[in-house]
Image (cartoon, one colour):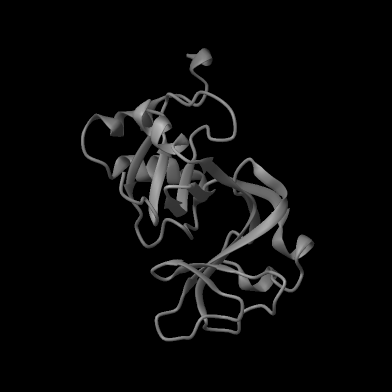
Length: 183
């Protein structure tokens, strides 16, 4: 399978529970060794300011931490999008295109270096072949990411928003009730 870096994984109704229920994952890396991404539509009730005070004023709204995935929930990962007219901040690790990881142990980026920044508690990870198997089983829809997906100001509606812009019957998934047992 070709690399899926920079694309979205959209949870299908086959994922009925757990941390990936109705999630949208932005893939930061994908190769023969596995995949790494962050769940971009699960904001937490913790402000970045409360956990990383120096970084609170640097993140995009909503200015909270995001549940990046079930791996290493006790650690933080900052994902940024470079401004088109600036150099990367100190500690920048490119993940492809204008997207990269920002070193939270270093100084915060200066004004204008980043078009946007999000901080994630944990991340989503797959070992070699695991993600490919889950895609074959129908757990994930793979689609192109639009520029605003990673930094959506309305992350709670992102799962439905991404599905609505797809072609075919997958758009019908947006009409499924949050809890089918209440139907």
